[in-house]
Length: 295
Length: 297
Image (cartoon, rainbow over the protein chains, first blue to last red):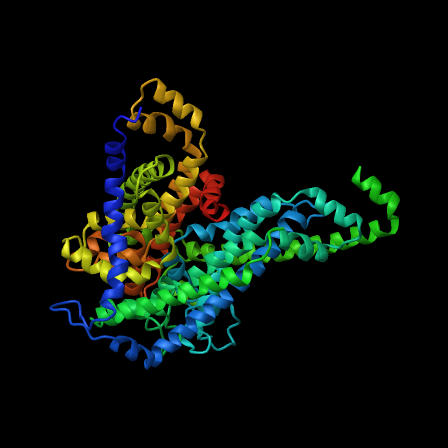
């Protein structure tokens, strides 16, 4: 029965492991290695110790980018989860007698669609929606007497526009996810609570949210990861890619430009390491803060 | 039965609850409708604008119907802006890479889930740890690894990278799935003298069908929508003939910006959205299940 077990195991694992080690594991390890060099991408590699990290520490744009990342990291999950929870609740329980409102399937189908679209295509569409002249959807909808809004070209609002698009795309997915979670909550629990005189608001906060806690935690982590990578949105939508004047610059954008435009492979890798530690901190904090006993 | 109990126990409560529900239902519809419009609005606007001339786009109201429904802009999007080429490139790359991801991922997941050997745990965690790192972190070295292998600006390179970066989630999910399959059938097949390979292809794969479908959809959508990897890999001389859809659209948008000529862009966008809507309409349930599968696990 054991006949041929090892050749089989090796045969099945060889190709996937080889690919994974070559393109993923090796790349991650080299990031840490290159972070300590001043390599431009060509020629000899020279180790320079912690110079890249000193440079990074003193780099204004780096700190602003981290700030923008944190802004997205906090607001994207909070806003998306809040909207999605309310909609999922309305779709599942809003129609009275704990049933969904009329047409809830239709709403769910429409809400979910943006999730299927590539972020890059969403970015191109909203680049036009937010256009600063009359050809843009929003400026076109505004009364003619208004002077056009600048949206992405306005330093103060550019990042908020990016955030709005990220929320627009994400909400539907979480509505569906939370709906699935709510569907698995026993109706008896709601009925019992209603008998005790609980109203809808109480039901929502005392029953739905605690019972959905695990799903909420997953949603938070997913959205946090999405917030770290708004590259497609910012690269395509923002003025001057990360602008105006660095107002939408994030770590991903900095890494890309250093690696492929400024020939600073070493510095780009140091930024990658910084991104890694930020992600790790985020994951550890999330697990710590959201940990609580299973209901 | 529940309503009866309610009625007898708390008659006053019932009417207030009813009123509250009606008000809430009204508000609920309003909020849901508003979001549905906000979701569909930009897409409808894009489709309407794709038939309009540049002047109409600038002077007319955003949701006004186009004066004529001419397919000129579509013709230009297809020939001059090469949207058809980008589309076919995307289909080519995603078909091969998803098929290979599923085959290789299922093979690795199966062996890791159901065979005991030295290094099993190590390899499993090596794959799963890939889930914890942002792809962005590796993008710089990845470019040079591909360059050294002569794979920059090749479909082969892009496909191999898609497969590699899809493996962590695929292996993670499918390993859990293969673990949950019953052992009896497996043992019976072994008794009957089926080889390990045959058992995998003829017994295990069919049994794991539902899991395989979910992850296939997940990978197709993920790879179809990929932007960072193609942008980083498909660069250099003559790269524009190998661009995938996301990259192509982004570039058409930049080009349209130079000439302030938007109708071709809107036609290109429409052409790339319509197939998604068609596929979504057909497989809506499976797609929702596939994409949320990872989060439910």
